[in-house]
Length: 315
Image (cartoon, one colour):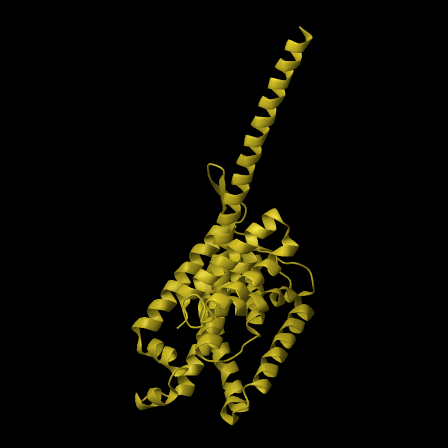
């Protein structure tokens, strides 16, 4: 009798252990799928942050390491107008693009007369943008302090649920806006004379002059567009997370890495690279901890470039 009882209890233990293993596998699958989905959405946001650098660095050969400072400026403009007038942050980001475009053109004009015209854009130009980054960050700290700021919108907080998959609207909306911005820019570059001139200016300056286009004017317009994208990216950033002035430095290495990974001048390649980095970071943060995410992501970048040095869609 005792032996039969022990056998029965053992069978029950095995059954419980088996159901626990199945539950553990289900939880792991749940985490993995949600990590991949979160990585896809995060990658879309990374694309919005990187598109300006793809234009300035990939197409114009201008190493604008101050681009995150303009993104932070976009975030704080969205914060000011949202907190005072309750305007939607995305609407603010889009409405402010003409202002950022003019600021970008003015910055390029200074850069051109001070460095590029003299052929000193390599080291001196890099120092110029580093100084611009520092000055912009200090100015934001003096005005807003180091406290985190956030915006309010109906889609910040709610999520869509599809089975065990969660889609936070604060990530989904920036993802969709980013894709729309990339599509508009892709059409502009491929279908307009100015857009094709921007693509040509870094490849053959002489041929562009033979087409009666002024390379400096084309680069000024292109750089203005690159800074204009920072207005939208900044609005998307403050939707995703609260911001403070120095947080932009966290994105410097990442956005240049994504630009190189995508192939420097390719928007589709840049989007693919951004999504890859986003997915790798999300999976790493979910299963191994957030501190490992940047290291694993950049290791993945190095591995990809070792296999394909030109980037995903580079030529």
